[in-house]
Length: 457
Image (cartoon, rainbow, N blue to C red; front, side, top):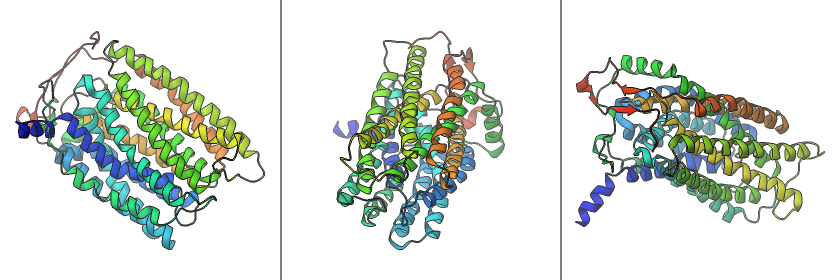
């Protein structure tokens, strides 16, 4: 009996989400922790941003193709390969910090770009495609919440090792050793995933997946999704979303001491995980229809992300007027409190936004056929990568932080009308979503999905 319970849990959707979360903790989570610590050996944000621009530049193309790769070799093996390519990035940061080596840092960034393309598309496809519809918000929150443990562990390690470093500059090289070790665990964790046909949903439905596919099938299917109006309306929020995160990284590196940055990295993970879990729980509330929940959460996000940008603009304007940039340390008075708190405030609502848009991604109408989840997550994460590439390329220049803040704020405003149309428009397609004509029945583990625009959960 005990063995049966363990076996059922091993094949459950929840276990798959936990594993994806652990991979995300070891790879994107630790990647975020490393970037939160600031730049490498020269304590400058410019090499850091150049490396990240290279990573995201490769992802801009790679994520677009990764959905097809996921359908071809399954999400499990795509995730495994992607995770294995992250560790050289962490090792490159260590070498740059300790020895001033820049070429390995850039090589690691390039390898990470390839790996992250595969990992980003496959983890999102699992996180939004595997769960039952009425549990999707919570499971997306579990995935993103576990990922937040990367910055939490990274921040804790950095804070412990740099608690007496009350100046700007680089963190100690020993900070990176533990993070490199954690990063090496991501690929082994991915081996615990079950294949989609073996996963048991609580409601008895099967997870649609491609048993056989080809380049022509994937090309036609991706082209079909690129013409999906609902998905097109979501592209701006995916494209512009990363500008806030990139600007915040430059903000933290430019104005805060090492131990202040370490504390910020630690607390960012705490507030981020809280934001993920709270948002996921709200999105799964059964007291209101799915449509009502979607609209209410977006209005909440719209108000508070805009408020975060406004507060950040006020603080950044004051900082930019100073003759010399400050080196804020813990306990430096009211202005430090405001400058530090706005960073936390922004990060909380940024994570609310991230959880929401990934939940919204799974709601794409006309994208429920077999293999479509992998394709749409790949496409949207490709646009996310394009936005990050531009953001980090801007950050790699000596463009003032004030200008970067203005650009990020303006781009957030640009996303609003498109996202409003996606959330408040009626994009449901009545009837049954048929399997694509180019895919024969023996090539698919089929599941027909009925879409009813008037249905309430």
